[in-house]
Image (cartoon, rainbow, N blue to C red):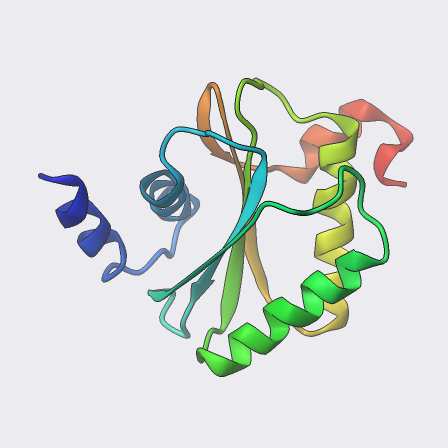
Length: 146
């Protein structure tokens, strides 16, 4: 199956399970090349909306622009009839999430919730592949998310 066929299949198949979400993100992002965040939009049936939002100009640490980012995502959801979103954190050369990544994960989850944006999940794409971000993994970092 060609890359285009795979993407066509991913964009017409519901992403109902975590494995489906990871497969979708892997198909879209591929091998991590630059530090950025991808926003993928899903409709009410969990089928990907054919609109991607790659954001590469986020500051190293979350600041007041997190609110602007969440507002933008909320507006795109309305404009594209998206029911939920997936955040994919592209991290080339890394094999783990660092405290600053967890700050972004937490800040986005909070800001999206404030704007009633349903966050289906967050995925990290790094040197070891793509995987769902599990909040219990952050507990090992201690007070970073508190």
